[in-house]
Image 1 (cartoon, helix red, strand yellow):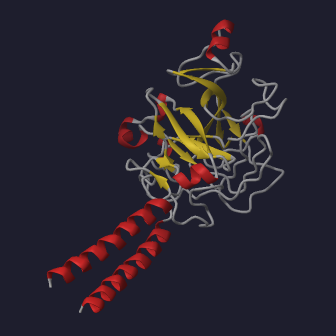
Image 2: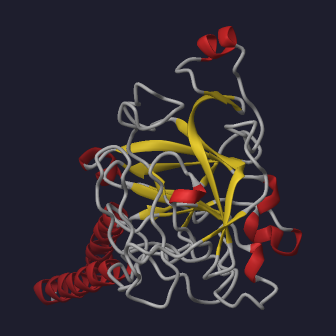
Image 3: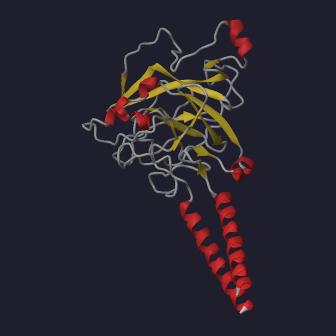
Length: 331
């Protein structure tokens, strides 16, 4: 009897171990803190770039500090894409997306993003909803749609020769490049990519030595690209070229210069039909709807939960079968 019991337990433990390994191998996207973390499969088969973000201190709001002291990052196409308006990725976190990883410098976050993602949005991981009369509405903050591939030569005034990629670069907001969307009443933040040297230092030169020689090593959670630019917000006008097909505000993603006069942006609601013009000019898919309860920590959600359930169901069935087989064999 004892031998039979040991055999049954051994078979069950073996199958359960296999289930744990299988779930770990297909588990996508978040660590124990709810931050995005690509699986080993994504790292090997797709590849990742590390993007840094210097979140403005103003984005951390005292009323919801426990939620907004951590940057969020959102993308709606590519590997591990967040949920979108059409529900194409229902097992992924909706707007405002994933939590980003914290770096060792206060206010600087990063994400090891799959390289097939062409556009991202940084935010303070707070969903303020769509009701402008709600006090929570203006507590949400986000950037414009940001191209995450590279700059072609001549595409950026800061990098006339272009960039190979934005890997290990940092996105810093420019307080003079904010704009108010007339449809949503919200504010979006433009900025640009910089080479990140570590220790909170960044610049437009590829190495710290070059930047120091030129006297252009920058610090701070915002950076003014054009010192002569006005700091007053300019209201955005709805697009007259491509009328939106829904009543929701639309967004045209960042073309590299983040000029509020040439962009349609909205805070709290990503684009309903964005097209990235950065680098290869790839076309983005439909992004997520940010509707839902304000301030929910939706980043702490593992993607592919339905797939996990299916795997577990099959493996548990296998475990039951194994136990039955062993019991019958030894009985």
